[in-house]
Amino acid sequence: MNSAEVIFWIVCFVIFLVVELAINGLVSVWFAIGSLAAGIVAFCGGPIWLQVVVFLAVTLVVVAAIRPFARKHLNDKVLPTNSNALVGKSGVVKKEINNLEATGMIEVDGVEWTARSVDDTVIEAGATVTVESIEGVKAMVKNNNSNI
Picture 1: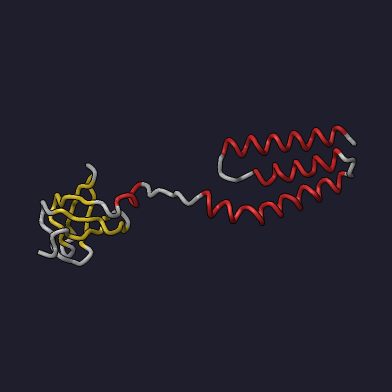
Picture 2: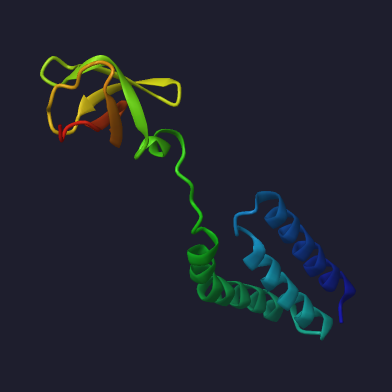
């Protein structure tokens, strides 16, 4: 056993874990596990070439085996942000929406947005609309009272 090699792999293990905890994005945990395996080989007296091979092999196997599962199950709580959070919300027309004249303004959650009608109907000021989608900087809306 070469204690310098064991210490090297322990230091690598700790550094990769600290980076993983700081970033919290499944970035370096794979290398930490590979470092731990290589450290075990070093502790058992394995040559440096074997330590490097074990480090690379374990890292690749862990990435291939666990990363797809982890990405699928750990990132399933993506919340819509910014403009995507507006889709489905109701707003009030502040300036008549007329696609032919390229006019229209709505207010949603206290923020004004340029708006266009999804079905090309003219929607008068004061009407309540629902945001169907966001296209660029424009809210594409549907008149809530279009059935009347």
